[in-house]
Length: 282
Ligand code: GUN
Image 1 (cartoon, helix red, strand yellow):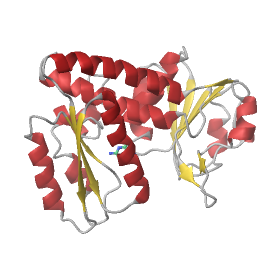
Image 2: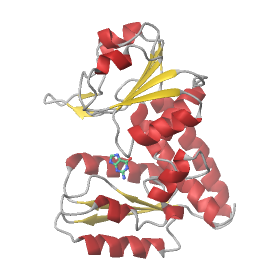
Image 3: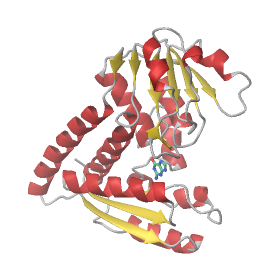
């Protein structure tokens, strides 16, 4: 069994980004990321802190707009429009989830697609599905980078994606289909999850449920990518996979923490760098 080291790969990518930023700085270019954070969700605050620190590490300019839980949709939209027109900002990210009174789709559609470094705008999502050059959501492209790094060929593979969110499952499936894999997407209404996972050469799970994938659900030699991040009541961070038992059957597996999570951050930085270069025709 090979452990897929997302942390090491993320560090390597961040180093490459830092080197490129140093070159851009000589031309007076500093990539900039604006993050909008609404409310007090502790996990969202943790993620945004990590994103801010990562920006600092590679030499980006970054700002975080913290807004109270009670903010109106119009005020968020006005802030995004300001960022769309701010020449120091190359990437705009609205941390999700948003409070219930906010229509998330309406918010995401206001972001200039050229600054949509999360790849959540329907324009970019459509381009991802069509296999065109575009910003794609950071977690799925982070997983694709892992496959590339570990020389895992996807063509003709049976891949089961567990979870059908707009952020992870759906764009993940689109990227895999474009890499010529045969993809099954399962979700909470799937009748018999195990019947699908057992047949899969590769299982990619992002459902947010500890121990959802157990050893009896995994084929011998399968590759398992765990996108889940769950905080247990004892404070431990675990994924969606029963790592201890599933890892014994796998050819490759990602750990939690230290797997997909750090890759998401690296891909956010990469998308922001790409946005900064594209805006200047580089
Ligand atoms: N919430 C959970 N994951 C993400 C992500 O990748 N981007 C944003 N903006 N919000 C999230």
